[in-house]
Image (tube, rainbow, N blue to C red; front, side, top):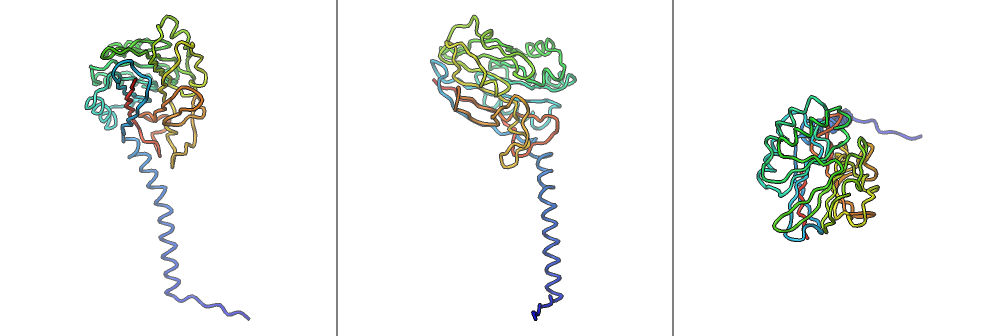
Length: 284
């Protein structure tokens, strides 16, 4: 015969307190994650300073990458972006697609671009949402040009800086458009420094660049770093990402940096994927 000890009233009360605290903690963790994902992380902005070689034949070129704005209004995050662009001016600013995701937001983008610094040469490409939103691409191009910004759709430009020269090529979007690297470079003179802008990072796997125009570096966006990526693990990625999520990729092709972007898509939530402005120090 086995005798079991009967819990005392004090022990039972202690157990109930433990279970109650455990339950409260279990409820608090997802609540805190929800608050952070909705109200804190999406409004943050960090600047990621990166360095790459094979840039200009002369001095270094500083490039600021603004990706995936998905601009809805000009709030605290957008004001932080403007402050960062003004406080540490770049030589070139590149807007790598998905600046807007709704046709009604074009006037908001117009106002935001009006506060961009005027010194740097500024270039833009299209993302999948510019196509998906139904925005008039001619009106978007005119909006960019009104602020001295060049929209590159399968087009290449030459950039000079302190006597050095580099080429920057902007591809059409991989998902919504028709990227054509050969058309973009058909009349371009080869240069040792070649920066390629592609909204969808999977475009890196299908560049089909002419041999004389090998890419020194690719800048992409689109992924939002997973947007909902607790502990850095992306739950879902949109078409056009392939195996790419965020940060550096140096295997199996030209070096590529994938920005986590700035805005949000579909749901206004970011978990484990803080918005970022990329500042590239592109050296010879």
